[in-house]
Image (tube, rainbow, N blue to C red; front, side):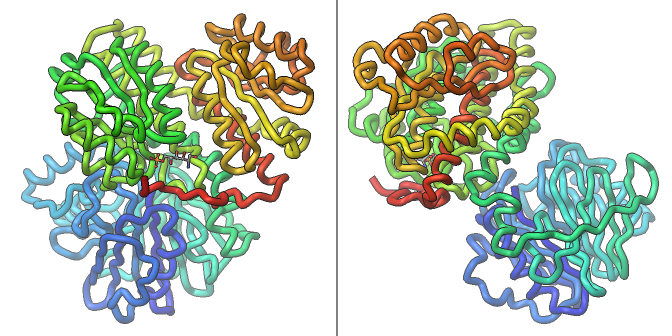
Length: 604
Ligand code: AGP
């Protein structure tokens, strides 16, 4: 996701917009830009963070728009930074979201004589407005006509050098209007203008807004002008960056449904998975003999889930290795091995080095990354991006589930090419995936039980996490989350392995968290739970909604909706993320910046 802001009023618009962009930097920080209206449209764009920039060098203006980019289409370059301007230089636009049919629109506009200066999807927007204006439409009508051509998600702000107004449109990407004293703000999030006003109008999907001397809103689906309530925001600027959340980690846990929606968006077409501009050919994928997944930490846990997904769907043998081990193991790989490198930050030194080792042995490297233009992405032969948005909390949450979404899509993609399953089976797999965001929202509503469990156990010194099959790596991830943010020692284990050692630890002081959903290993894992209870152990079960019997062998039950075996990890990890968060909160830990940790481990 990106940060957008616009201003119209008596202040120096360039100053207001520059400050607003800094407030929004957490939303995207690979590049930024401002367009201001004074004697035409003046634009400044820069690669890199905006923090530390005191003056954009744009002088005075009364209308300006600005954007911090978190790249989705096109590399991290000045030309790809927003705002984007029409060919005649009269229309400037900033955009948050994904225009799924941008390629067809570029083809159409090229035929109409337009030339593009960037690789972005966004640039089609100002050019379409110019196209319709050249065909006789007013700025306002051309803006509406442009919207009718777009497929995908957008929050758009547009200005015209000949007009004293801003036009705004929203579909599936957030945008709010700030209402001051004879001045107006528009932004992707309230922090951008909260120091000037706390009166906001939340714009809804399919709203078109005209900001001139007042705010006029029309909803194109209702086909009429609408009045949206002006509400007063009751949190201060410092809080606002986290919105209503006390910590970024909690905010990011709650952002997971949207992160999955964004990661899937434009990549599922009926029963098929499509990756835009994917550089690994079908012949290459068909010829791959094995996959080696390399990663660290939470990304390594995602890799183990990915192993289950790619093997079950693509029927290719997959092994998973720590990047730090792989790079020194003199791995036996060759040009028939596909190495998949998973990294949220794209800057993890061990993973970067492992990629170089893989390439030196002739393997192709596909990376799964959350930061466009990062070192891992640049070093790889191909990258499939998670679109989780910038992840600020050091403990990774939304990036983890977004990685699972990419690995799941990739498993279906391989299955399509290698014809390992028929279309109906693959269509059903994709239907399970597309239900996940809504099911995640259901899990998030159940946090009362999780807070109660946290309050009961936050003083414990140790914990054991158990799972089987695809939920074994979920147990590992749950244990890592607890360690990272609460400093309680926790270990994840395959449930059946407990009998081979850890069972010696079972007592009434150490909670055992078991992922015991009704998948293929349900009966077996119930026996493991009985073994724990027989020794006076404390059992917290993550179970499938509707499973009442599990209560008889639980001290606490945390429910998740029913789904398929391959898709359960998306849901079962969430109570464990929330449990770790709330335990850390009761222990008054520094949740977003835990001691000794860094968000990106760029050293060996
Ligand atoms: C996860 O919560 C940790 N912050 C850490 O284990 C992290 O997953 C690991 O350092 C890998 O980071 P990457 O995904 O950016 O490569």
